[in-house]
Length: 407
Image (cartoon, rainbow, N blue to C red; front, side, top):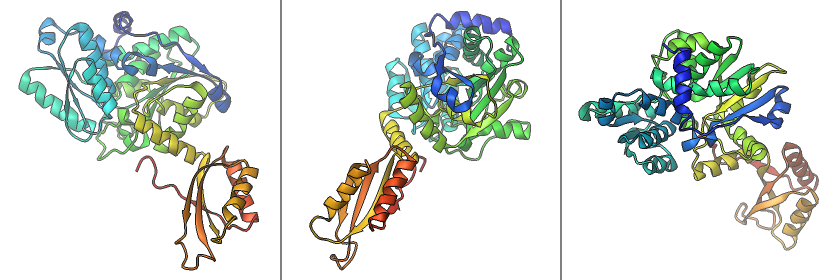
């Protein structure tokens, strides 16, 4: 049973090893939604995510014999670092099984905390199966990343901090992968104040909890597809499910394209790096049909590798019409490029890249292709540039970007 006494005990234990992540008021998202929006920035926590809370509290409940056997767990990244860091603090050996698809930064950081890392499988569920096998073979003490009530209790200490700092909170938005964070936060929130609404947020391509609630039983998704790797789980926790059923008021699902835009918003308006799973609760703000409420969105982590970050920024700028490519046909004679450049300068379009293709037509005097990649202020500015090119007789065609981030 998850009890108030257990949560209070966990808070005392966890406070010894965690940073104080004070709520951050968001003027930008408050004005966008008509609510008072606050962020709980667990992306600023030790190991870059909230997971150290559940891992450390779980270790505090183990017997001496369980500690001596060493720990093993499976994780797509954040739980791995949480367990590795907590085990290092407790002086315990830890082995972490991670999917082969785990970003290199998360693998290296996990090793950096002193854990042995084993790469196995393409998704979390396959890594989990291998971790259980190794636990049987070597006698390790298995620490489940989410389907464990002690782990969920440790994660729930976030709710204690939120309500202590903002007692009048109306809504708490929680990311859901397997359900450990949401179970802990929702259960404690309802124990402290049943009027608080707790909203779980899942990737649309990995909505295992939503589907389980719909069928009134824990189910496995046949496949998952999301850039939110920290919440890419096929099957939620069996032990957690009854608590989710009782304490979560609604589930919102988010498309990957929404996470890309949310990343830009957080970087530009809050100067924060938040990983895709942590951005779920940011993207979900516009899906809440409420006004004049106090809302806390939990930013669950900030562990994103630089290559992923660069790709998201690029696709986000394209998605918001702040970067676009246009193709125009020009006669192949001196001075034509200068004419186009003058027009673009007048429209305040910033040229990022030019591609000049003389072989678009057999008759080069009739036409060569010029592809121009431009930076604009947004959709309105982009449209005015395209209109100006049209009026000058260049018959511009917008070039679709190759693929999307989720491809």
